[in-house]
Amino acid sequence: MAEMKDGCVKPARGPIVPKAESAAPVGTVVSQEGPRMRARVGKEAPDFEVNAFVSGEGFKPIRLSDYKGKWIVLCFYPGDFTFV
Amino acid sequence: MAAVAARYDDMKAMSVEVLAMSTDSRFVHKIWQEEELTKMIKGGVPFPMLSDAGGKVGEVYGVYDEGAGVDIRGRFIIDPDFVIRAMESLTPEVGRNPDELIRQIKAFQHVVVTGEVTPSGWQPGQVTLTPGPALVGKVWKEWKP
Image (cartoon, rainbow over all chains, first blue to last red; front, side, top):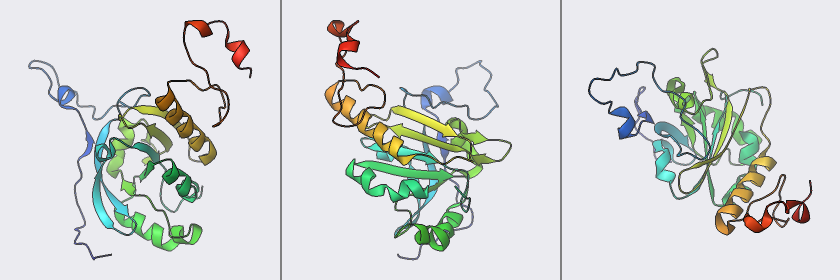
Protein backbone atom coordinates (compact mmCIF):
# COMPACT_ATOMS: atom_id res chain seq x y z
CA MET A 1 0.00 0.00 0.00
CA ALA A 2 1.51 3.37 -1.00
CA GLU A 3 1.74 5.77 1.88
CA MET A 4 -1.00 8.34 1.45
CA LYS A 5 -0.79 11.97 2.39
CA ASP A 6 -3.68 12.77 4.64
CA GLY A 7 -4.19 15.61 7.06
CA CYS A 8 -5.92 15.32 10.41
CA VAL A 9 -9.08 16.97 9.20
CA LYS A 10 -10.41 16.17 5.78
CA PRO A 11 -13.93 17.43 5.25
CA ALA A 12 -16.32 15.16 3.41
CA ARG A 13 -19.60 16.28 1.95
CA GLY A 14 -21.76 14.06 4.17
CA PRO A 15 -25.39 13.73 3.09
CA ILE A 16 -25.99 15.08 -0.39
CA VAL A 17 -29.39 16.70 -0.68
CA PRO A 18 -30.92 16.65 -4.16
CA LYS A 19 -31.03 20.09 -5.81
CA ALA A 20 -34.82 20.23 -5.89
CA GLU A 21 -34.92 19.95 -2.08
CA SER A 22 -31.95 22.14 -1.26
CA ALA A 23 -33.03 25.08 -3.41
CA ALA A 24 -35.87 26.50 -1.35
CA PRO A 25 -38.27 28.71 -3.31
CA VAL A 26 -38.00 32.45 -2.70
CA GLY A 27 -39.97 33.53 0.32
CA THR A 28 -39.90 30.22 2.19
CA VAL A 29 -38.19 29.86 5.52
CA VAL A 30 -35.22 27.54 5.24
CA SER A 31 -35.35 24.88 7.95
CA GLN A 32 -32.51 25.01 10.44
CA GLU A 33 -33.18 21.51 11.74
CA GLY A 34 -30.46 19.87 9.68
CA PRO A 35 -30.84 16.54 7.97
CA ARG A 36 -34.10 14.67 8.42
CA MET A 37 -34.63 10.97 7.91
CA ARG A 38 -35.22 10.40 4.23
CA ALA A 39 -34.51 6.67 3.92
CA ARG A 40 -37.62 4.65 3.05
CA VAL A 41 -38.12 1.33 1.36
CA GLY A 42 -39.23 1.71 -2.24
CA LYS A 43 -37.63 5.16 -2.45
CA GLU A 44 -34.28 6.26 -3.81
CA ALA A 45 -31.39 5.85 -1.37
CA PRO A 46 -30.20 9.19 0.07
CA ASP A 47 -26.77 9.87 -1.41
CA PHE A 48 -23.70 10.85 0.60
CA GLU A 49 -19.94 11.18 0.39
CA VAL A 50 -17.75 10.29 3.36
CA ASN A 51 -14.14 9.46 4.13
CA ALA A 52 -13.30 5.77 4.30
CA PHE A 53 -10.61 3.26 5.07
CA VAL A 54 -10.33 0.54 2.45
CA SER A 55 -8.21 -2.52 3.15
CA GLY A 56 -5.29 -2.66 0.72
CA GLU A 57 -5.99 0.84 -0.61
CA GLY A 58 -5.81 3.17 2.37
CA PHE A 59 -7.91 6.27 2.87
CA LYS A 60 -10.28 7.61 0.22
CA PRO A 61 -13.61 9.39 -0.08
CA ILE A 62 -16.53 7.18 -1.02
CA ARG A 63 -19.78 8.36 -2.56
CA LEU A 64 -22.72 5.98 -2.39
CA SER A 65 -23.95 6.81 -5.88
CA ASP A 66 -20.62 5.62 -7.30
CA TYR A 67 -22.08 2.13 -6.69
CA LYS A 68 -25.24 2.80 -8.71
CA GLY A 69 -25.98 -0.15 -10.97
CA LYS A 70 -24.89 -2.68 -8.35
CA TRP A 71 -26.62 -4.31 -5.41
CA ILE A 72 -25.42 -2.59 -2.25
CA VAL A 73 -25.61 -3.60 1.39
CA LEU A 74 -25.06 -0.60 3.65
CA CYS A 75 -24.44 -1.55 7.28
CA PHE A 76 -24.29 0.93 10.13
CA TYR A 77 -22.80 -0.21 13.43
CA PRO A 78 -22.28 1.51 16.79
CA GLY A 79 -18.53 1.62 16.86
CA ASP A 80 -15.13 0.09 16.29
CA PHE A 81 -13.79 -2.00 19.18
CA THR A 82 -17.26 -2.84 20.48
CA PHE A 83 -18.37 -6.30 21.37
CA VAL A 84 -21.09 -7.72 19.12
CA MET B 1 -19.67 -6.41 11.20
CA ALA B 2 -17.27 -9.30 11.51
CA ALA B 3 -20.17 -11.70 10.89
CA VAL B 4 -21.02 -9.99 7.62
CA ALA B 5 -17.34 -9.98 6.67
CA ALA B 6 -17.15 -13.71 7.31
CA ARG B 7 -19.87 -14.17 4.66
CA TYR B 8 -18.17 -11.93 2.13
CA ASP B 9 -17.72 -14.79 -0.33
CA ASP B 10 -21.51 -15.22 -0.42
CA MET B 11 -21.88 -11.48 -1.00
CA LYS B 12 -19.37 -11.54 -3.84
CA ALA B 13 -21.12 -14.54 -5.38
CA MET B 14 -24.31 -12.46 -5.46
CA SER B 15 -22.40 -9.44 -6.89
CA VAL B 16 -23.20 -7.38 -3.81
CA GLU B 17 -21.05 -4.46 -2.70
CA VAL B 18 -20.86 -4.13 1.07
CA LEU B 19 -20.21 -0.82 2.81
CA ALA B 20 -19.83 -0.55 6.59
CA MET B 21 -20.25 2.73 8.41
CA SER B 22 -19.85 4.03 11.94
CA THR B 23 -19.14 7.42 13.46
CA ASP B 24 -15.49 6.44 14.01
CA SER B 25 -12.81 8.17 11.96
CA ARG B 26 -11.02 6.42 9.12
CA PHE B 27 -7.94 6.34 11.34
CA VAL B 28 -9.75 4.31 14.00
CA HIS B 29 -11.12 2.00 11.29
CA LYS B 30 -7.56 1.33 10.14
CA ILE B 31 -6.28 0.48 13.60
CA TRP B 32 -9.34 -1.69 14.41
CA GLN B 33 -8.70 -3.59 11.21
CA GLU B 34 -5.02 -4.07 11.98
CA GLU B 35 -5.30 -4.77 15.70
CA GLU B 36 -8.43 -6.87 15.94
CA LEU B 37 -10.40 -7.64 12.78
CA THR B 38 -7.49 -9.35 11.05
CA LYS B 39 -7.38 -11.71 14.04
CA MET B 40 -11.11 -12.50 13.74
CA ILE B 41 -11.31 -12.87 9.97
CA LYS B 42 -8.53 -13.93 7.64
CA GLY B 43 -7.35 -10.80 5.82
CA GLY B 44 -9.61 -8.56 7.88
CA VAL B 45 -12.76 -6.78 6.71
CA PRO B 46 -12.57 -6.81 2.91
CA PHE B 47 -15.06 -4.02 2.25
CA PRO B 48 -14.74 -0.24 2.74
CA MET B 49 -15.22 1.09 6.27
CA LEU B 50 -16.89 4.48 6.06
CA SER B 51 -16.65 7.31 8.56
CA ASP B 52 -19.95 9.01 9.36
CA ALA B 53 -18.56 12.14 11.02
CA GLY B 54 -21.09 13.52 13.47
CA GLY B 55 -23.69 10.93 12.49
CA LYS B 56 -24.99 13.15 9.68
CA VAL B 57 -25.55 10.27 7.29
CA GLY B 58 -27.01 8.15 10.08
CA GLU B 59 -29.56 10.89 10.76
CA VAL B 60 -30.73 10.82 7.17
CA TYR B 61 -30.97 7.01 7.33
CA GLY B 62 -32.82 7.11 10.67
CA VAL B 63 -30.19 5.21 12.62
CA TYR B 64 -28.40 7.97 14.51
CA ASP B 65 -28.84 7.90 18.30
CA GLU B 66 -28.38 11.51 19.46
CA GLY B 67 -28.05 10.49 23.10
CA ALA B 68 -25.23 8.03 22.53
CA GLY B 69 -23.75 9.94 19.63
CA VAL B 70 -23.43 6.80 17.50
CA ASP B 71 -25.19 5.06 14.64
CA ILE B 72 -27.17 2.07 15.86
CA ARG B 73 -27.14 -1.19 13.91
CA GLY B 74 -28.96 -0.42 10.68
CA ARG B 75 -28.84 -2.44 7.50
CA PHE B 76 -30.10 -1.38 4.08
CA ILE B 77 -30.38 -3.36 0.84
CA ILE B 78 -30.17 -1.03 -2.19
CA ASP B 79 -30.94 -2.31 -5.69
CA PRO B 80 -29.10 -1.41 -8.94
CA ASP B 81 -31.67 1.34 -9.62
CA PHE B 82 -30.56 2.91 -6.31
CA VAL B 83 -33.86 2.12 -4.60
CA ILE B 84 -33.87 0.94 -0.98
CA ARG B 85 -35.44 -2.52 -0.98
CA ALA B 86 -35.12 -3.44 2.69
CA MET B 87 -34.10 -1.86 5.94
CA GLU B 88 -33.60 -3.26 9.41
CA SER B 89 -32.42 -1.52 12.54
CA LEU B 90 -31.53 -3.01 15.90
CA THR B 91 -30.42 -1.51 19.17
CA PRO B 92 -26.74 -2.24 19.67
CA GLU B 93 -26.96 -5.23 22.05
CA VAL B 94 -28.15 -7.73 19.45
CA GLY B 95 -26.08 -8.60 16.40
CA ARG B 96 -27.40 -9.18 12.91
CA ASN B 97 -28.25 -12.44 11.19
CA PRO B 98 -26.25 -12.65 7.95
CA ASP B 99 -28.30 -15.70 6.84
CA GLU B 100 -31.44 -13.58 6.76
CA LEU B 101 -29.61 -10.78 4.97
CA ILE B 102 -28.44 -13.21 2.29
CA ARG B 103 -31.92 -14.74 2.01
CA GLN B 104 -33.47 -11.32 1.43
CA ILE B 105 -30.89 -10.33 -1.19
CA LYS B 106 -31.49 -13.60 -3.08
CA ALA B 107 -35.24 -13.05 -2.92
CA PHE B 108 -35.00 -9.44 -4.17
CA GLN B 109 -32.63 -10.45 -6.94
CA HIS B 110 -35.07 -13.20 -7.92
CA VAL B 111 -38.14 -10.96 -8.06
CA VAL B 112 -36.32 -8.26 -10.03
CA VAL B 113 -35.31 -10.80 -12.70
CA THR B 114 -38.53 -12.84 -12.85
CA GLY B 115 -41.36 -10.48 -11.84
CA GLU B 116 -42.56 -13.19 -9.46
CA VAL B 117 -43.11 -12.62 -5.76
CA THR B 118 -41.70 -14.73 -2.95
CA PRO B 119 -43.79 -15.96 -0.02
CA SER B 120 -42.74 -15.67 3.62
CA GLY B 121 -39.43 -17.34 4.44
CA TRP B 122 -38.74 -18.12 0.77
CA GLN B 123 -35.47 -19.82 -0.06
CA PRO B 124 -34.08 -20.28 -3.60
CA GLY B 125 -35.71 -23.27 -5.28
CA GLN B 126 -38.94 -22.98 -3.32
CA VAL B 127 -42.31 -22.07 -4.82
CA THR B 128 -42.88 -18.48 -5.92
CA LEU B 129 -46.11 -16.74 -6.87
CA THR B 130 -46.96 -14.86 -10.05
CA PRO B 131 -49.31 -12.03 -9.17
CA GLY B 132 -52.29 -11.43 -11.44
CA PRO B 133 -56.06 -11.70 -11.64
CA ALA B 134 -55.90 -15.51 -11.87
CA LEU B 135 -54.17 -15.77 -8.50
CA VAL B 136 -56.71 -13.74 -6.53
CA GLY B 137 -58.31 -15.99 -3.92
CA LYS B 138 -56.21 -18.93 -5.12
CA VAL B 139 -52.99 -18.37 -3.23
CA TRP B 140 -53.94 -21.27 -0.92
CA LYS B 141 -53.61 -23.65 -3.88
CA GLU B 142 -50.05 -22.54 -4.53
CA TRP B 143 -48.67 -21.91 -1.07
CA LYS B 144 -49.41 -22.56 2.58
CA PRO B 145 -47.47 -21.21 5.57
